Image 1 (cartoon, rainbow, N blue to C red):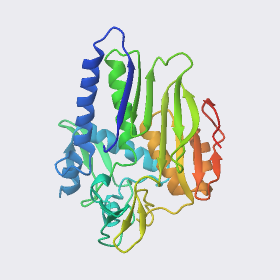
Image 2 (cartoon, rainbow, N blue to C red; image 1 turned 90 degrees about the horizontal axis):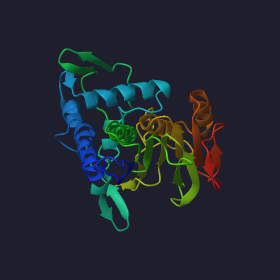
Image 3 (cartoon, helix red, strand yellow; image 1 turned 90 degrees about the vertical axis):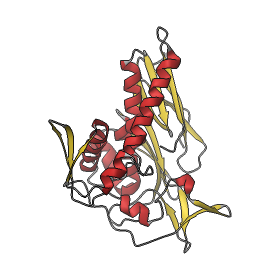
Image 4 (cartoon, helix red, strand yellow; image 1 turned 120 degrees about the horizontal axis):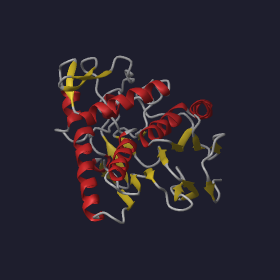
Length: 305
């Protein structure tokens, strides 16, 4: 998933190294199912498939189902159907593969981007052979705004079900806590979404804390336009909503990640209402550097200003 992974577990009665190796293998399975950048991944095969109904694995069915839920819950602000727009904007290969020119990453801008199509016609259903997804032919998906959070959910759940008393899984900064938390809860240093420096410390017993920002994955098109990876599905181009970063604390990683993306796309005008509607804690930073904090806050220590 193009990210560093950190796994902390408390499993005094188990073979912890073996358990961690099993978790690594499980993460590789998820990557092989969900990656847009692996040509032979299950997602790449689905995106190329000319059939309207396709049999998929449980892993792919799960992320598609969660994506549908997130799309509906955010009124379409989170939209995984922007894969074609991402490619048109120059993000057709992994970020690390973008060409570096001087001190800047650069990618060829190949064609005008189109808006996302939305998930209204996507159906995931269980059948005798397993799972089937039905979607309009030609509709392609990108799980960059939900995959790391869902993977953290699944890996943490796997570890606890395998016998670990507690687990804390971080995938690219998307953190999922599960099981019996250490005394006082998990203490995490949260990085400022735009300054990329320590911002505040958050304490949580469970759930997920996820940060999203437009500041890290940035590049320039060949004609000099500044680009980033958070796409406005209504236009197909990088969002200019006025919100540059968001940190969300929610019950599950997939939801925290999808919502953090939706907040950035929606901008300050819609972000607070979205947090209130779903009763989640969030800290946001505007393009001008102003901090916005939702009315519900997770337990925290230190300063967030």
